[in-house]
Amino acid sequence: MSRSEPVSLLALTQSFFLNYLQSTRGASSHTIRAYRDALKLFFLFLAGHKRQSIADLDLDDVQAEDVLRFLDHIESKRRNSAVTRNCRLAAIRSFVQHLLRQDITRAGQYGRILAIQTKRATQRAVAYLEPEEARAVIAAVDTRSPRGRRDHALLLLLYNTGARVSEALAVRAGDFRLDRPRQVRFLGKGKKERICPLWPETASALRRIIRVGCEHDLLFQSHRNAPLTRDGVAYLLRKYVRLVANGQAPLRLRRVTPHMLRHSCAVALLQAGVDVSVIRDYLGHASVSTTSRYITTNLQMKRQVLDAFWKRAGLAPSGTRKWQPSPKLLAFLQTL
Image 1 (spheres, rainbow, N blue to C red):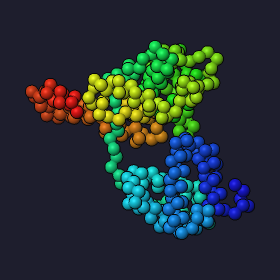
Image 2: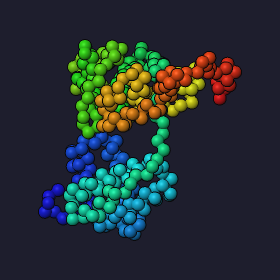
Image 3: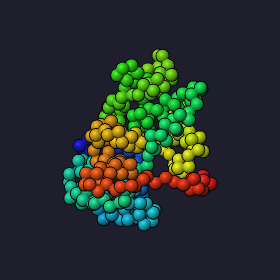
């Protein structure tokens, strides 16, 4: 946008998405959609409150008081959680920071918006699969068909590397090195590259689906040779979870998502004693605090820490034994 052009809300909104989010920040399509939805809701609310069309809104209409009214609205009227409220606020903050960079004359107005605090929210425990559960789901894939071999390689890759679904679906054959040192190159958030090692089992599964001369093609495609989608991965994962869940009551009661394999990889690495900072780089987290939340959600690790404390303090109880469910209880759970 030229400096000689008049500054307008419409022009700055367009430059926020096209110039800043896509070109400068390299935001993922998921982030762009989330920010788009948040600003769309905010502009619709603002236009309704001002009793004018969205096209008639200008920069003077974006005030801290209106942002606070909008946040109250999505909680009270739309029944959004505090977590969703904070996500909407984060999108508005990012947009207002862009406004501030382009329009310093309204610095005070934008500063009051940036000073709005997030709301304390109860953080949900991270859902994950134990190693034996993840392995059972992967083993449920029938690899005798081309589609089964594709699914087997994809699930192994997701669990092996802890990759985001979008990262796994974007890989091409040329991103892999299947000889020692076996590894894959991912392009993560903010267009940051990272290298993850591959298990021999994962490399073997990938060799079975990579075609010669197709190094530049997306590796994971549908039966119609179209790129496999996030929804497609969720569908095939649910299919294999159902096959395993028939014999495992706890797994049958849970909603397993592709992102849960990423959580499962992180927890398995923690259980193996891998340092949190190493896991941060392995998963491509921006901050180690994001990785640390896996520690608080794993009961086995909490139990190990407590046992170590008891032993060091000389308080280890004697004669205790691990609780085991009775056959009657297991039979009852199977009937639910």
